[in-house]
Length: 614
Image (cartoon, rainbow, N blue to C red; front, top):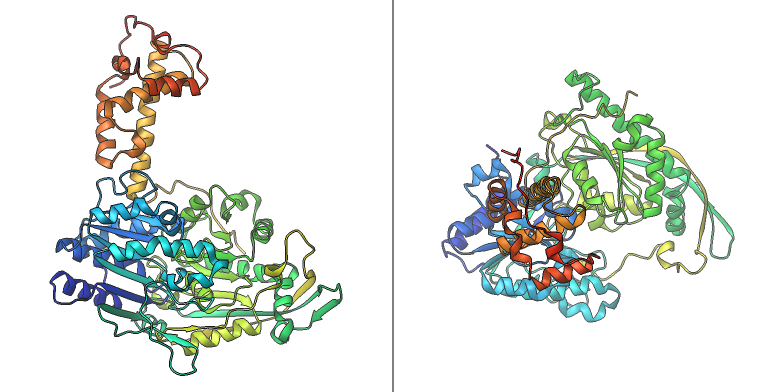
């Protein structure tokens, strides 16, 4: 039976107090170090409040589409269903009719709410909701948005989510950091007024109606909830042409001084990056080889569920990410390269599927990304991170290194697991490391100083870039731990299905309906009951929609299952008359380029051969 951590126990106690009306608290702020088990908190609070009939439904808003599946999985995890005694299910909803589809809530994204704010607000006004907002620090305070014209997207998120916060019966606000990289205040949080001349804004932890739950990195390490990090700092040289086309260089990134940003920009796109990639790849490959030897796995075993270890590469931009992928694949056997190293960037259509496979399957074992796979990615198999990014804000880097600090229950004893992060040895990253070591508490400050821009951020794509990278080389590698050969992969095997979340179940059921409809079309084509080609499938889908009074894209799980049962017992051809005079079908039929009338497509049925279907 899984055990709750200290912060999870505290959230459970607060939820029980709310359910029993022993407190006026309706806002719970959970400041949980990245990797500390934040995703279980909506399950804990939702289960307690729903059981007490304090709420009707749960809405969980996440910053990225790739995190919706993880949110669904948290609610269907059988271990926690038994431990918490709940039966709640949330579905990953699009902005369509009936967001919950008969379930107890839904998961959506900041972007989806901003695209259809009235749809979500109407849902909140019809039902009592627990609203869980993940990674709240992405949302700037609305009163401050007039000064944030440059952050138009985040501003629209805040303005759209604010009415939901106001309408919710209870709120769970979660973040791995209580500060924004740009120094702005965060939406909905209660702040104290600045004192005197200090330009520091602090959260009021004693605000009425609020309960604050902190879980620092020190606490998480003490409870063995996360892994200690070993940093591999790589130093090197760099040379480039500046805006005036003057040759500039540094002999060491660690001593670049005012040239650090230009030197770093150069290093991430030239030989230094290749050397760091090589070191991270080699280390991860050797780690996987040791694990295979310890487990005595034969070469034909894929290591499913055995915690062999994986490598996450964070690139500075999409073009460079593609170059990194090509480099990594060049070091792998050809028969493995395509499946073992994959790319997940916003330009890739299959990016979400790649991320899901990286999380849940043995392959790919190497993932190259820019931003979409760093924050909130729950992949305990990650043991190595190559942090080849220019960003040096503390919140961002904390999220990045946390990808490797999750404890993997399949990877052996806690003390045998590792989290190794490779990074350039520049002064800015070293300063971040010091902050990680010394600022372990949950005290939240908002500083007014912004991170300076990098050269490529200032450059206009229509003009010549401000600097031109020439070359760079790695010169030294040293390791520090933040305290309290063989083939990289194996043969491909069948790894089974992904965990069956509500949205995955809907997808599979819709596919099954499509297969049953197509089978009937083929059988009836053979019997000359319907014209060949896409026309028949279009007709039968229209018949099914009329019979079920709803498109299958709008059906609940129970309705999808009922439709499958109907198709297994009945024939759509017996109900073609339902759409003969349907103007909507006639219009859509013409849109598909069909010149003939519907009755001509559906001639009188000749004597049917017996069906071979059971």
